[in-house]
Picture 1 (cartoon, rainbow, N blue to C red):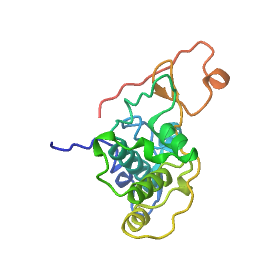
Picture 2: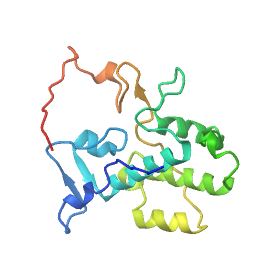
Picture 3: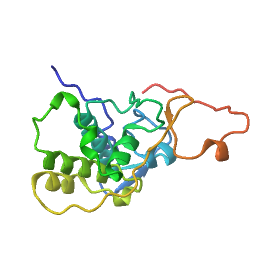
Length: 182
């Protein structure tokens, strides 16, 4: 039972102290934990770490990995599955069954809501990590989360998709990859 968390925390420390956002030339990280603005545009900020934290929070609550999540025939990602349960007002259904009744439901609901606030698609809508700490340690009223990023998974290759590939994808389905070691 030695916990190991492999995510992309710390990316925001790479940029200079006088900036709150930076653009990279190459994307480094693990899909499923990276924020949409970083995956699509190469832009990272402290809000990129907030996104990663939200994903980790969901993995703890559900007992499922973000990258390996598979729910029957659904094309929903872990975030999408949680969002769907939240919108259907059945968020407690996502909780890891091995936890049984060892948790106060109102606290887990609060953690799910905080996680959803952390993974909102627009970085400006996400809270700061200091705000997340306050939310976790107090009973302040939380805002309603907006649509999260990476709701659907591409069922053809099990990768995350932000756009409809049928409409915007490559005509010949070719990609160019530049493999660079870290």
